[in-house]
Length: 136
Image (tube, rainbow, N blue to C red):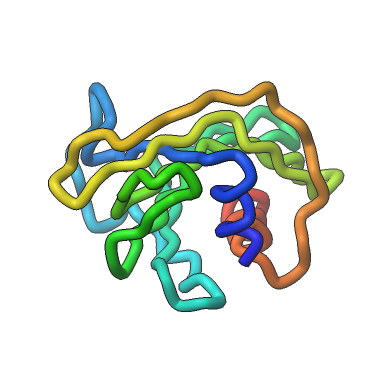
């Protein structure tokens, strides 16, 4: 539900690697399964090729593949969401820096960049699953 609140509050969106400019070839080992959202509305995958580490800081793209077409607070329909997030592996904080959404036909539905604001990772959340994958 934290994910849906994020969209309603900020009207967010982000690109999948298959849609991203200068995208790398798709490979089975590129995407790491993280979880299914609590409401079963999407599958969450980590883009292993985008992972960058600098000491305790990890930056990565996280993909949400929606089970069905979803409408955000502004009435925009989308099927895929990519979040660009920065994790602090020491303090257990995360910051959203960018997002992109795509429609079912692969066209961009929206995107936005943010000034990174670190927030604590909620236990049991999708972010915690990503945290364990990138900070191990």
